[in-house]
Length: 256
Image (cartoon, rainbow, N blue to C red; front, top):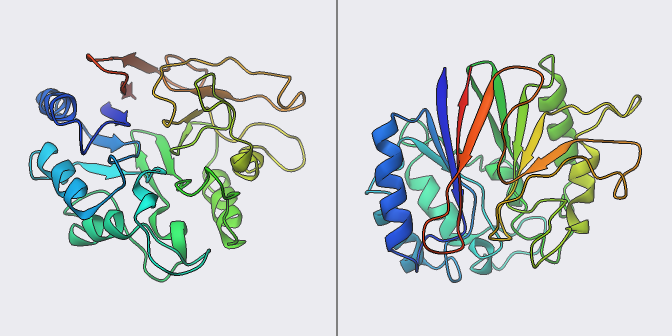
């Protein structure tokens, strides 16, 4: 059994909530803390320094998917080689085992941060969608869908959770994100259209939402998209969503 905690959209300029939340999470002996993206306001060096301080000066139990605010401070390279400068700088300071967030400098752009973790029989898959307010995933890198399909199919079953900052489906103010539809395509078997993962988890919209399948988006393919979840058919998975004072998102899950 392992406890996994996710929160998003609030670190950096909001000092109180992330600090208190992380402090409490660590009393629960987490196997992993996932930050779901957006160090406010623009992912600057000072804002990432504040984020690190809010994490208690340690990211040894943490990883993070980058959000659009993190990508607001970026390198001068064109896509697909552009990177979020201060997000990358922070995590390169703390490569595994100093954190759970790799930076693979042999890859291009957001692919450098995409990785998997296998915990208690579940595969957690982390995908970078930071530029996808305006750019279509995979942002010009044809290797990224190949990688995603491979990591979803190389282990049997659907005990897999895909984490990204942008969700394909959303009832929040930003609405559905067509820019990540190619990512959505990768979540289904190319022949049978059977889902390859049990759940997707996204931030970005500052709300907590549970989605049943929505046939109007993709009538032949169904998967549950969530910011808060509990239960599925391939193992015991529970979650508790907690909103503390401001419109932030947080989730705790126990997997076994």
